[in-house]
Amino acid sequence: MRLRELRYAQLPDRSRKRLLLMSSESYRSPPEFMLWEPVSVFVGTGTTRSLVAYPETADDCRAVLQYCRENGLSICPRGSARSYGDAILNDQNVLLDLSRMKRILEFNEEIAQVTVEAGTKIVDIFAKCHHLGFTVPASPTDSTISVGGALAANVNGKDSWRVGNFGDQVVRMKVMLASGETRALDRDHERELFLAIVGGMGLLGVVLEVTLQLRKIPSPYLDVSISSAADLDDLLRQLDKLKNSANFVVVWIDGYASGKNLGRSVIHATTWAKVDFGAEKLKRDIEKGIETLAGQRRNALAFYRATRHLINLGFHVQKILFRPFNKFYFWLHKRGEKASIKPELFLGHNFDKSYVVPPPDILCGPHGYTVQITIPYGKGKEGLAKMLELCRDLPCPPATTILRLHRKDDHLISFSEDGYSLNVEFHPKKRHRAQMQKFMQRFIDCGIRYGSKVHLPKDITLTREQFRCLYPNYRKFLEIKQQVDPEKLFQSGMYRRLFAEQR
Image (cartoon, rainbow, N blue to C red; front, side, top):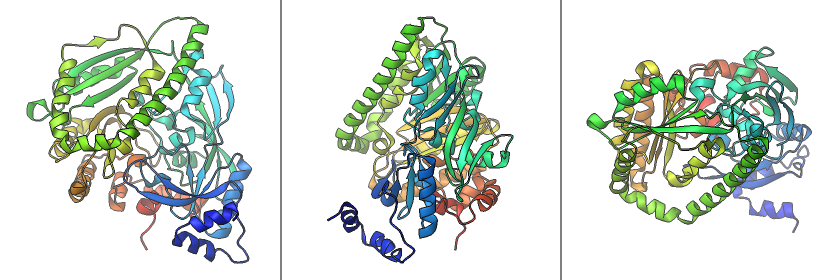
């Protein structure tokens, strides 16, 4: 039996039915780099099946678009597949996986710009330019995220209140539209489409190339300081001061604290260190840092996969375990600010730290949720207090509660705000499923009252009505989509859940 026939035989009935319906004279076999595969993502979405394309050139992408138009299939671009929910699912349709389009096309040291293909990983850019004194602003904590995915999701870093989100670092891009036409966009040329594609979740076209504005830094090292906040008032006072002095800030919040201790937290603040170790040592340190990063990621994921059942078991008594741990962690940092004895490599501090805790699929478990939601500065104390209280009263409070600072941008569907964001991860048990679903709706509705936004790549719970309240610019977004993709070629599970009109 030939390989393609074998794959056909392994398909579920509905996939076979789709192929049989497409077996008319007009149907042609997909390109050889397109294969039916099971597809799943991090948290709570189950497994789907899609025809996955692995293009290596723009012509390959154009061939996939043509194939989809001819056979009535929709298409969803995918980078490194790091989104948590249905933003990168397209059941029984096509996924365009851009991971093989990963070349660094140009690095202009004089103007601090780098041009890359969309599948290039963030860490690959650091490998190219970090030892020369350049950084990628608004870098997420996962080094394996692709540039195209970071642009489509408009991700944020620990420095986003200073530099904006990832989209603010984009100088220009090359995009292939549903027609197969390729356009070069920037903020001056086709500005409206540019602002819609950044943060647009891949629903308007295929991003082929991206030019990023890098930033010059004194060294690839950070001076790190850790302090504690006794309550929410103390936390917000300290954050107001750090806005002007720190380059990066991230806050761990004790999700179990209540009463006068509500908002009890530990603050990690860092600044770029001014050190001169020499060009050769810097290059060796960066190479070793990237090698260590890959090793730690590989080992950590193997460990967490091997122990996932024990981790799940531990969450059955999470209140017994987490409450004293949170108190101990706060007490450990309670005795004043602590500064690092020597500078830490940015690569280790920004990326490796995320491997201290399990990845989202294990941390949240088979029934879990992750949500990142903003609260504007003007309503910060009231909004944070209300949301923390809602989370604390659950039978399964958050496994982690992380706070960051942000600033607003002008992209149409963008997770940005002059304010704070809470990133909470829940690991409910199966018996809590109905209660947790109701809680998530209350939690989002609470955010809507405070003018919040929800980060779409981490969402699996928003209703269409909630989405429209959170993102009132969705109408303008859909108008632009009608102009550049009138046949609705670009779709995803999230698109059908949140954007598409009900029939």
